[in-house]
Each structure stands twice: as C-alpha cells, then as structure tokens.
Length: 247
Image (tube, rainbow, N blue to C red):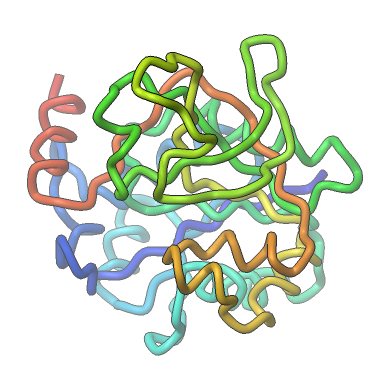
C-alpha cells in the first residue's frame, strides 16, 4: 500500500466555530493533529481546508495545506478534491481521512486503521473501541458499530453503524458495545466511488455518512483499538484537551 493522510478542516463548525485554530498547549488544534499524523509515519500528510487562516497555521508549522472549495458538502469531498490536486499522477492508492478535531489521537491508531485493508475485498478500514461508560451506550452522540469484535478477533467486518445501542443489550447484559472512531482508510477507487454517490436513505436518517457506503454494497472492516481519542466538538471538550495536552 502507498498511503497518503489527508485532514479535512474548516472554521465553520456548528457547535464550536473556529475550532481548528483553537489554541491547545501553545499550538492550534489542527497543528496537533498534523503532528500526530506525521508521527504515524505511514505516508505524506496534508490538510484540506477552505480558509486561508487554517492554511497559514499549517504552513507556519511546516506542514502542507491544500485550499478546497468552501461549498463542498463534506470532509470526504474535501479530501477527494485535495487528493486530485496533490496527486494527479495517482501515486497513492490508499487515502486516510483523518478528522481535524482529534488532538489526542495516538499516532499508532492511524497505522491500525490501515490493517483492515490487508483483506483484498475490504474497501474501507476504520476503528472502534469498547464502550466502558454505561452512559455512552444510550448517548446518541456516541456512534455505535455492529461488528463481531472481541479480544481475540481485533479486525472484523462492520455490519451497521447507529446512534442507537447496537447490538441490542438489556440492562443486565454486560456484553461489549463498540464506539466507532471516525478515521477512514479508503482504497482510492473506493473514495472516488463514495463521493460520487448521492446521500442514501439510512445515511440521512441516522446522519452517518458511512451508511452510504454500506447501502451501496461497499465493505467496511473495523480494527479494535484500546481507547477512544478525545474528539473536540464543544467548549467543554476543548478545555479537556487543554488539560490533557497541557500536562
């Protein structure tokens, strides 16, 4: 595999506007994510962004930024447009779509996201971690994944993603549920196919983009990791990231 890591970022976040440039331990959040992607060492890294301010922060940190159309509907579309700009000769055959709001992400998790692609029929690799907090089971902001994962089986095929607790588990049932982590390793052809598809009915119902791929018959395999990195979506998340990285 010849991977490239692309990080979509935009300032117009609904819940936390301007978050890519929010300062954490003396650096913009997008720079923390950039550095963790570089530390993974899987391939070149670039940030796909529609705003000059984000591009300037990235280049000031020695990174590569690609300006994208501000009217693109999703991070996946920004990744695809940046890929076309950076690699018209199609040198890279795997594209890691890494969210720009994961400043505590262990670099080794990026490597693990590539693991499912060792299976030739897998189109997209992603990650999950066991849910240990009981409240997360019913929290609709925590995306759950139905996949036959276990301590012995750390890569498995994803059957469904939902904001509901899946598979079903009763109050006394302590069997594991799994928290989906939104990092995607696409085969290049799979990314091209995905962004060309219209939004699907289940995607729109659950507000989960990955369901578009499943409805189109694409195969997503998931690798199990030990913990969920902090995703910064709110002011409280940002403060927690500052506390963690400030140490």
